Length: 211
Ligand code: URA
Ligand code: SF4
Image (tube, rainbow, N blue to C red):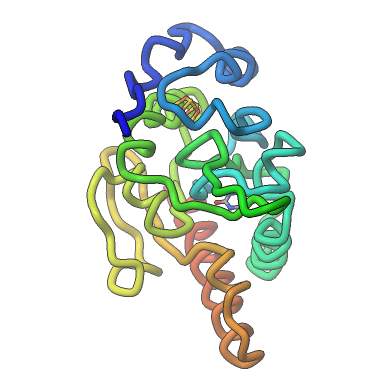
């Protein structure tokens, strides 16, 4: 099969648009092939002057239908962790590394497929524009895809999570993806993973407060 066309998002990102303008423009993006099977692009959402930006992987099935990030099962895990960390979800900005849902159709079900590095790279201009407009002091990477998108390198979550990583003028905090908490079957393990996620978010909140 021929390689899909992936010119990258750059030419679709309006230079002087605010976040609302970016959110409108992303629906027209053809920077990679993922737009074709998705319902819509899911752009970031939240406070446009947020001190903390949370970056996930890509919209899931529920997010693809709703048009908003982290509103499905992973979003409930995230909300619970934000709550435990004392962070008001309305005070942060939440987005994803990749704006269209990648999946495989199996009968009636759409099964999540991890975005490839080529998709992360193709979509990067949208994330870069969000970072520039929102200008957070702390960026929380929820999982390896987000870390790859934000830091531009491969990250081992286990080795690098839970400590502030200076990155230009910002601080990056790496943590696990909420979906990895959902995948744990053992209740004790799940509770520990949920607590670790909350602890990493609390660290991000402390970093955001420090001058
Ligand atoms: N997982 C993500 O990474 N992002 C979402 O928006 C939902 C699930
Ligand atoms: Fe554009 Fe990103 Fe969607 Fe690809 S995934 S079409 S680069 S918005």
